[in-house]
Image (tube, rainbow, N blue to C red; front, side):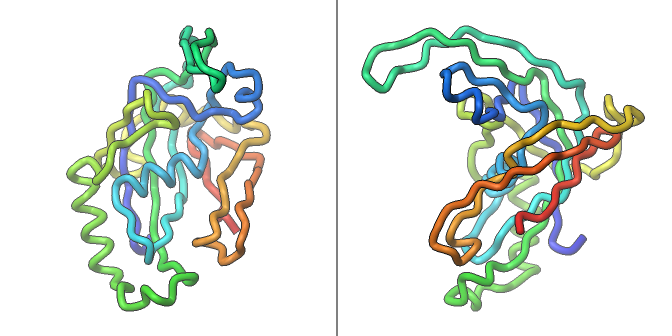
Length: 202
């Protein structure tokens, strides 16, 4: 695929929070990362306002395991409270992403140089990203390195279809849509033999 990068994403813990569980203060992770979380990770590897990064697919390499932890989050009114957060544990993913130029930033047309951005992106990935990698939340540190998507043995390779229910796909931001409002996208993903193919945001 044109202007694409493929990387392996690993971490001891991840928390891709289901927004429904935020209301009670006890966060529960989705089973797989959301499109928006992976996009944020790809933008931590390399990003410029003249490009938009799209996530094509994610491959779940390790079994989906969860672990609850007792935490003491700070309350808005002051002081601490007690809560249980349910994290994904020992995560490893293969991700395929690519970029296109942002049509809503004609002022940056002079920066539309595919080879330049692609080469910088590949160098940034090799160095582990330009900014810190977080797996859904700041306390879950992640690490990235180049890989070949589809190589190696994954836990769900011959598992068949797993329906993941209604999930948040991502958020539409005005600088990428040209509309002066933020919008939330929902979808019903299916993991086929460990791979989730993402539909494009539009």
